[in-house]
Length: 168
Image (cartoon, rainbow, N blue to C red; front, side, top):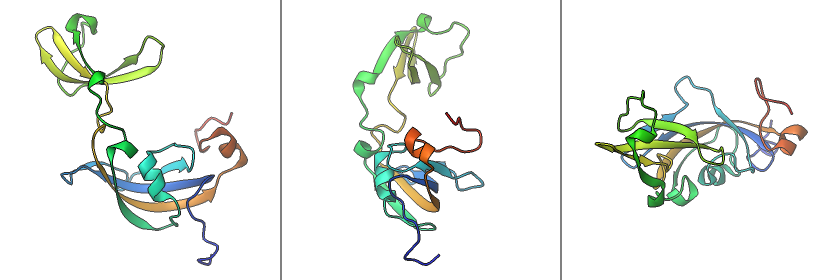
């Protein structure tokens, strides 16, 4: 395939990427490079972080790059109103609570919610419902592993279909 006809990342393209995510200290937070499978997503439908999607726009297969993404284009700012104290008695009695533990449940409307235990003082348990990376600047090293046209169904449904995915 000549350079003139090589596909580039853009709307209605299915894109496969390998990445390493680091924090400001340079510590690896997440990676799929070491024997992992690529992240595969449909470009242009807000399936990944806005800053990462913007940085991939126009890239070609095998292109490697680094990008720094501010909180506003990642998980947003850390919102103090998402930190709350609850009584230990409102949590399952048989649960052994520890700082850093992730709790999952549903809100009154039945939507899934997650909260991290940030403090335990007597009967008070402080929960943080912010994403763990909220308020953080993210540093990605990315390799574009593949690009293809989305199928008609993928474009209509707004997500990638593949082995194990629902074809609805």
